[in-house]
Length: 111
Length: 116
Image (tube, rainbow over all chains, first blue to last red; front, side, top):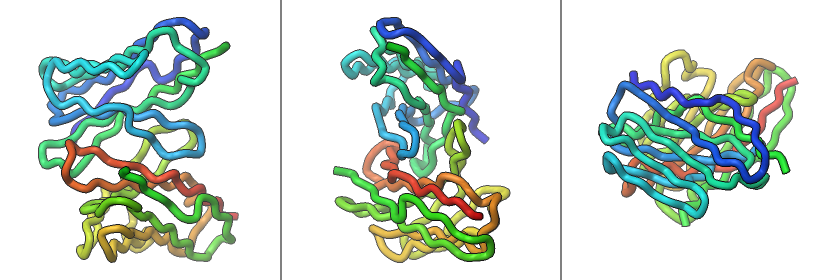
């Protein structure tokens, strides 16, 4: 069974601060997705990384896939209240037919 | 593109009744659809995986006779919670993949079920 450990579980910061969310596993994943979910809604895909060492930037968000494809990080620069939500990482298996989700990081950005 | 809808978005029912939730891929053909359950402030828990025209594969601990899944077409999957009880109250989310991208799943908006 593949497991993904996500940390921290909860993060409360002030507007303008930077933060990093980590997603770690002992398993190798063929791909790694990051999703953001708001209360009462389904998760929305932010990014997919597939190559070890890959770095993708989406405005103030920077996503990195570990060289060994076992871990990933999400860094947010100058967080804004609109960034508030539940961030989920999910690793894809080699067969391409399943995602394993991390436990989620609940982010609150105070104005 | 890649829009998934769910219906209903919110349902309240009495204990003992059955509730059907629909999941539709609106602008693509979904080779595989997934059903998740999410408890408050928790991550997603995969319940089952369904492929069009075949029986769903249930995760360990999920009762297949309790949660009936039908994937009749490439754009529609349904989850029926049979004889619902208060402990079945939860947020149910479906997702779909067209099989062309790296494990990317596109999620529906979820259905909040409350069983009285």
